[in-house]
Length: 97
Image (spheres, rainbow, N blue to C red):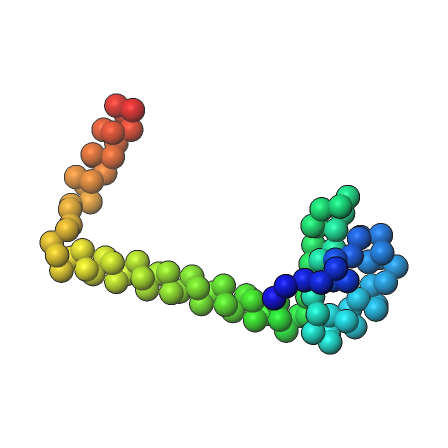
């Protein structure tokens, strides 16, 4: 979703127009509040924020599933090593570096 110029609001204006901005956000827009000319915070509908959080949560689960699949592929291909041996190699590399 892109932002129009009207969706970028200086903090000083946001303070004075919070109720109006909240109504616009509830109607479907999102607002970027700026401070000293730079992005500071966003004003988004609570339901949309909840949706964003669910998407982020799902993304984390998909990454974990992907990592698990790669691990299973490594097991099937015999690309494994003993954990103690791997830790010792890592410690030796750290001491040498």
